[in-house]
Image 1 (tube, rainbow, N blue to C red):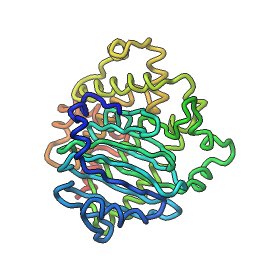
Image 2: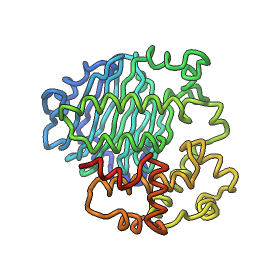
Image 3: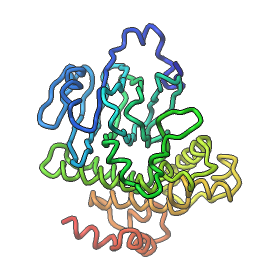
Length: 341
């Protein structure tokens, strides 16, 4: 088995005694009850209530209609686990959005592992026939949304040019694709996370988010192989490194293309090309839009003034911040805050 440095603390003896959870997902909800038993818990409404010795937090499922089901996770693990996806049906495609800080997923049939999560491959599309295994460390927090889409429905989304039918064609024959979600998908998930799980409106919010994410997926690098020609897995990992740099500079000016290129040893032309293909936006727009999104979150808290927020994110003045905010969200910061009351 292959581990990254964060999982190297697991010895063979550790693995022998770790509890194994087997998940039999499908596009319906037949897996919910058996999974609850595996977690030494029970189903209550749309919640899977696990034993508190295994994990705390929300594990929530929903039939989104039209052959799509969703599993929402915002949990903290209380034990080391081996999570196995071993589906009894092969009639679905799994779409996984994972914003966990650290994680790893392993193909048990190919001895091939991938780092997943916020600073790894945070989006994966996997054929339901593939058996997957992941190791979960006690104390880790997971925020993820899993969508299970009936295969015939998934492939019907793009009938004309059959691009979806060629999604899993590769030299190694692995029925999975890994990449980065777009900034829009990240925003959809972050907005969903702020909703109260189980509230009267949450089912609507969850189903709407599922359809928004699927719609966005159809335009991403994972689907359009012609647009993604020449971009390697190593290129994507380099873009992830630059995302980290940009995330650390949100309270200041854009670092500059040359600094980002030096960080990942790419020429400016290749860097801008790869960044645009992976994240569907330019480095400058990514930095600005991320900054504005976090500023919007602060406005929602209604604890700081517009001027204070503009200063916190390094805008030269409140007027420039207001102009950028209005361009992004079609309203001024003042109008936005007035709508909150």
